[in-house]
Length: 484
Image (cartoon, rainbow, N blue to C red; front, side):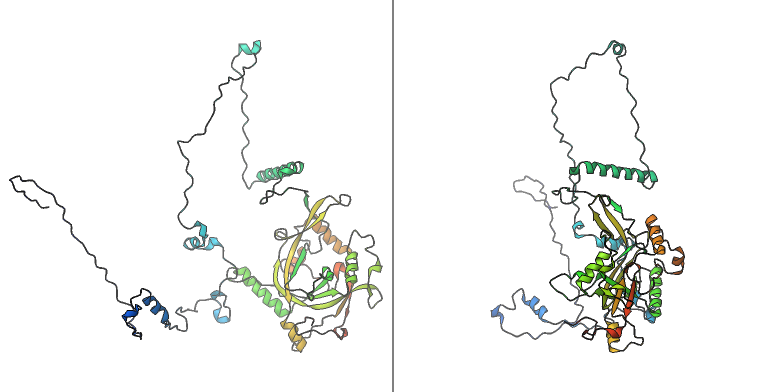
């Protein structure tokens, strides 16, 4: 601070702030790499090329990157300590086939899986405004006077108040009383919705109106002896493509082929490894193979379907058979198409067979049965693909053991025997209890006793025509497909 004096003898102090300029050095570090001399053509400064702001960026883009990568690409891997890597098992250095649960991740990594909508600043909620109040209109009209009380009420002007009924406490969520209360409430809501159909609303399409409703009940009379049904999906069309749907596909014979001892042993080892460590071992697929057979004609397919129609009064008529077997009895002829193998396989147990997929059937005729939707469980789901490698080797004669594949099957449809009926009756009595306790102890979990090979649909018989008696005009390619 400094002071100055004025002329005239009048001294007055003057305050003045001292301003100092402070400079901070920002020295850049030296470049990590030595400089590189470039051959730039000299076209002079008059062109303005060297003074343009994009000259340096363009020059950097034109220079190729010299990346020297070693054999390990800069990420050395220490294979010592990884289980099974020297035995040919590379599962420890590969990504798991199943996505791990988010609960197993570290909290720092779990934050990286948040959706994009949650990133950024959180939007503040609409806070309540304290100075706004709901507008209320007070009527100036006086309330109606109560009727005059009797002489006894006049002696006791204080009215009697009944004690309010205390609500029963809410039971625990896992208690049987809570479950029973919720089940009773669901039936009450369903009964009220059936009386007034306008109460039923679609969860997403509010403009839809309920036309009709069906009770959904289990179909206990349609259980097979396995305890559930199979759903089979093909990766491609089993028949040549055409513009008209081939109705023969509605009825087919799929005959499973017994796996070899080597395949069973490999599957059991892979299954045990998955059960021991499902995080690092993918669930193995059962290496099951199937022979696929189709009827010769559309007439055979239609009459074969009539044999299984319970509403058809003539379903047991032997005149529906379109061919005769070697013994002279009526039968249906099914022709071999090709061999398939399992691509995907999902096998459920009795406790979870109602969780994945259901087969439903509608019944609108009250005279036959109640009007309802009947559902049946699916216990096995298979995706099949054409078998290629084994088919090529078989056609080329490279297989050690030649597998006999029948050219045709002669199918005779019979009724269930007494033993099968007893098994089906046990399933209908208790769908969750396996009627094969002894066989399950010996076989793998979920397996049922194997039926005799060659049995047809519903316990029927079949006659096998040898492979050498195939039609000579049938030409098949190396993969087993029919040539166009």
